[in-house]
Image 1: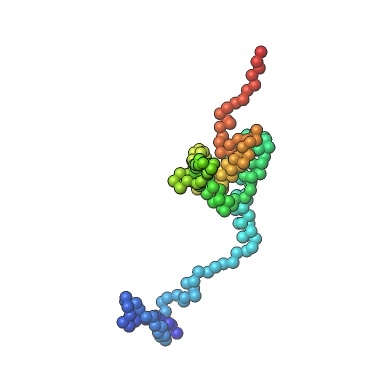
Image 2: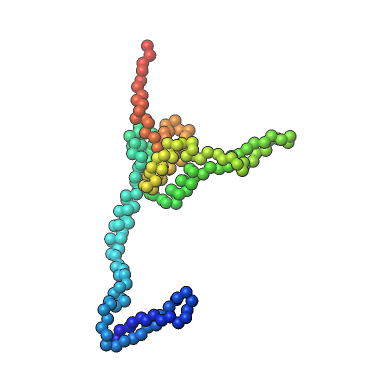
Length: 189
């Protein structure tokens, strides 16, 4: 028994067609049965899935980037930064930090009145974003935009530097300018 579909026009709007199933006996079908045309989903062995997941997790976990940080002299700042950069990749954190770095908040204006000073947010002026103040970082983040883990590492390093800028051994994690300068001790007679 073979089922065949016939199309009928019964005065429907826009040329729509009514589908009707007609059974015909004795005619061999040249089409494959519908069941074999469906996509076959295969079950994966749980060990293979775990290996695949751990492989991708290990690729993103423990990556310290930019690599020039490893060449810097040891310090407490570097040690804390390394711990932060070794955290696994998180898309939510990446989006949050990128939004925080690109946001231009309203400028706070000051107006002197007889009763004192009044502060208010301007409707027309904006404060510069972090990227406006650090164009070299913004350029690197844009260049690394294809690699989300590297982009997140730059942003984590920047905000860590902003929070710990008062440390005497701090450095800008996105720059490798320490290689340009060599400190030498000079004795004065």
